[in-house]
Length: 255
Image 1 (cartoon, rainbow, N blue to C red):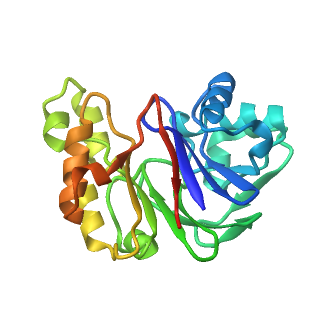
Image 2 (image 1 turned 90 degrees about the vertical axis):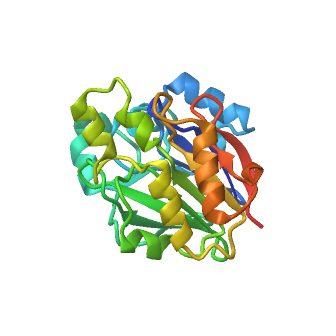
Image 3 (image 1 turned 180 degrees about the horizontal axis):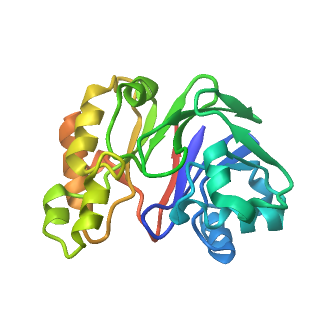
């Protein structure tokens, strides 16, 4: 099993996970042209994609889903709440499947476990992907951790973990007070310290890859995110990967 990021941040998000001939994209927050270019950058074409799974209805995660899926006849999976909020944008898709946040499903050779997270969306989920042996856990767009989140992510072989902001940088930024409250609130985004604390509570004995994701351009730095996660794992800073907005992150193999 392997995974890569097409880009991660408030301007657009997409992650791809591949097992054999099955390749699934999680979210698509980019334009048609940009998505194709980003896929090509990691050696994938449209024909390689088996489907798209969606986390929630915010534009940086879903705005490219309907146009891309409609043009290329790609199946889409999402929760009922996300479908309701995105409305008529999803009309006319060839295959659209509603999922429960509590029930796993399969796409080809991938086993996929959605799980509920606290975020300011209708019915947001994140996902754990598995080939039946190894597990990749993805957690972005959550304002805080929960026992359910930590139970779900425990013992993963790879993790993509939100490090959205540094609390001090956000507090002293030029964001309006209401936006600061939203971002830092229980239904907003994880800061570096909370992400590191979550990570330290997990069983990480099988962990092969850790990726810091969804970093704010204004209220975080790569160095601060990496420092927080490396301290939590007691590992060298260069062991921490970062998925960036423009470049994403190349393939990582889970063996």
